[in-house]
Amino acid sequence: MSFYLAAVLQALCLGPLVLGVYLTMKVFRFPDITADGSYTLGAVVTAIGLVNGWSLWWCIPLVVLSGAIAGICSAWIHNRIKVNLLLAGILVMTALYSVNLSILGRSNVPLLQYGTLFNWLTVFRTSDSNTLIIVTCILCLLISFMTYLLRTDFGLAMRATGDNEQMLRALGVNTARMKWIGLAIANGLVALSGSLIAQFQGFADVNMGIGVMITGLGSVMIAESVVLLFGIKRIAFVLLAVISGMVLFQLILAFSLSLGINPVMLKLVTALIVLLAVSIPQLRVYGKRF
Amino acid sequence: MLSVKGLHKSYGKLEILKGVDFEVKQGEIVSIVGASGAGKSTLLHIIGALDKADAGKVVVNGKDIHRMDAKELSDFRNKHIGFIFQFHHLLPEFTAVENVCMPAFIAGKSKKETEVRAMELLTLLGVEQRASHKPEALSGGEQQRVAIARALMNNPAIVLADEPSGNLDSENAAALHQLFVDLRDKLHQTFVIVTHNEELARISDRTVLMKDGLIVLD
Ligand SMILES: Nc1ncnc2c1ncn2[C@@H]1O[C@H](COP(=O)(O)OP(=O)(O)O)[C@@H](O)[C@H]1O
Ligand SMILES: [Mg+2]
Image (tube, rainbow over all chains, first blue to last red; front, side, top):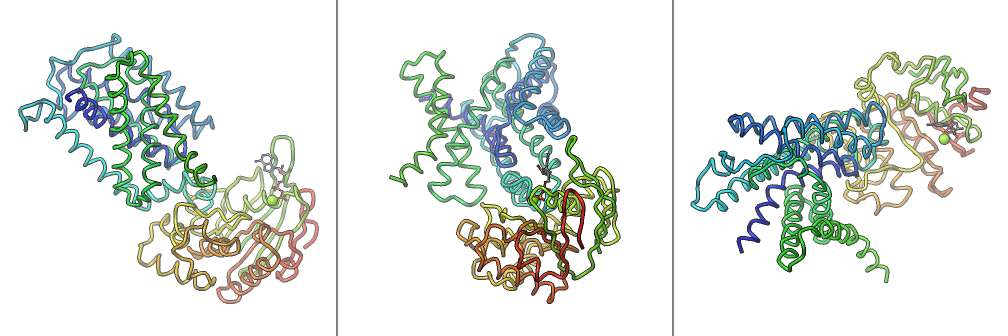
């Protein structure tokens, strides 16, 4: 049972990441690969902070800021040098690998002996319940923030930019600005996830970000299908669905492990889940046609 | 109102505009006609600050748009220009009335005031009963009317339309053209319309012929 609980906790720690991926999908209709690098960056900054005894009050904002800067780099390359977002993201992600490795000093730093966010507050006796409470609080804050943001005029223009960038430019939106702000917020969230996961798992590793954006994308796709199916309109519920998508995702992974699937095959399973998630909308169309 | 002087524009080696001069007065409907590839859309995009000229001057309402930076240009498009394209380009996830509100929201206007004006415009254009529908539920003519309402939202100095009836059947096209005339009469609205439609060219106040990057007939 605690095996599945761990999967749920892990999914919740990945909550900020899914919100970030959701935001980029809204603003660009396109996933941003910078996430693989900024996720690790968040973990690395956290590790450095914990090892050097920085206060978490400083550490967490620094994590978000570092992710935001990574996002701004991608946006700058995309907007200014007119490189498409896929390539811009790959460039920044690749560069971040060296940055992360040089900041961390080696490829893996254990963090178990340090006081993390999750043992800083002790409401319950068991550490899992504590983690659950803290992560849930963080997610509630983030969902409120995102709901507010997406409902403002600014957020409206941001959402609409993904719908039709040319038209939004014609209507007088500075779409380049939308993009860099969007990528900054999204990667700040992604870095926060990297930090939470590092604290939850008790280590930071330079390779931990590989494929994490795909996991986020899969969750968003699962959520989009659910949102379509039930006609969910309210933004807060959509965001909840997006996070639930990640919970479902992690549970499926945990379940396949419990079936005795070799952990080496986990990325393959991940890819298959995402493939399934992206094909659901197509299946619906076929269902209607025949 | 609008004054264009000596506009030049090239894409690579291909010279599209070769020194276009052009004036439009307040409350005029001017249509631009010409063969496809003559540079009509390019001219319209430069007037509307969606694209930059290599040389020349565009002055709208006394403002020289080539002196503006990116932020000022966005603001300029939002406040002074209304665009209508051949395809309606309504945003699919928003209703008709929300689409009409969009330019005002972008300008940071209050929600209440904006929604009242949006409904007035939809009524003026005869599509008020479709206000809460998504674009996909509307007919081609209705979609284009909603797009016109959106273009008028912020009281633009000029509405620029690029083949607005190019995608409509003749009946809907004729109704749309009449609408431009009505709006000119009622609101004293200025229009610059690129069109292949002879009837629209006939009912405009002036017709301008573009050929090989120049205005040859005024
Ligand atoms: N972004 C662009 N890059 C390169 N060539 C372009 C671009 N936009 C337009 N053109 C070229 O400019 C010429 C004029 O185009 P356009 O202004 O759209 O003509 P019209 O609207 O009169 O049919 C065409 O030959 C077209 O291929
Ligand atoms: Mg054209």
